[in-house]
Length: 277
Image (cartoon, rainbow, N blue to C red; front, side, top):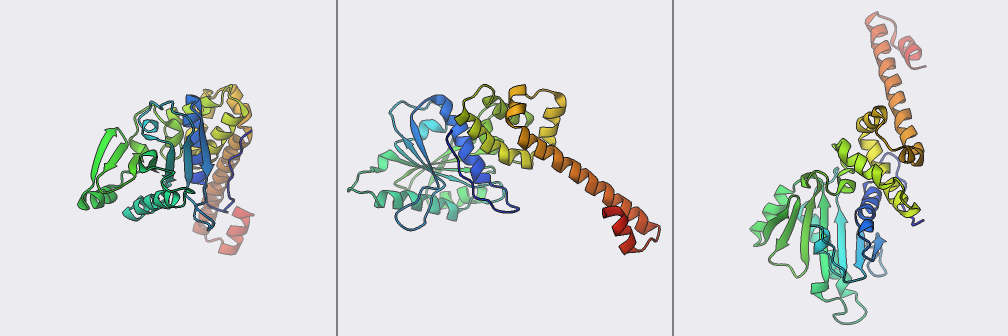
């Protein structure tokens, strides 16, 4: 089984871990041979792009995002909690230029074989405005997919996942707090009958989505529309959501009990001990 590594950070949702899984989940089914290099290091110093996607064969990808990919593709993902700014845009282009500049042989990576794709949930109005101000052109080639042309040597596109059409790229859209039931179900269905690799990619997406879409996950469970094979495969994740939901319910009830006792003039220390244990 292909492993997608994740760094543990207490209290922080690992959106990038989910994004790595989403890239695999969206593009593994195309069967186009590609290599996904997570947190690819640039040179000897610890400078890492989010993902370097190496397209290992000439078979074209036909979807609106993938059709842009060439042999070497720098992918940068900004979580819904971050902003996609002109600085982030410049940083991604910087990674691409540094990646090319560190090539072993002069022009071993031609500019026409190199692309940059930035992913973000929200429309980056200020960034697009800054790009236009500096003479670049922003063209929407598909809902949520924007190509940047003008003063750059590296072909660049921006993907606004919240604008992607219904039924498309569900793995990317499941990484947002407002993910639809349809998108989450589409991701879950990818694991139904899947091999271990695809199950692992879906698990990476789900590890983020279950934390930020608890109500939708509960609706899916209660409606009985989750495939049984998927329910078994992701039992731990689903049980975690259910456990957290019960805990939140207990906390709300304890807070209500505490407030009622305080309203009845029961001393704060005593009320807190009774309500919260």
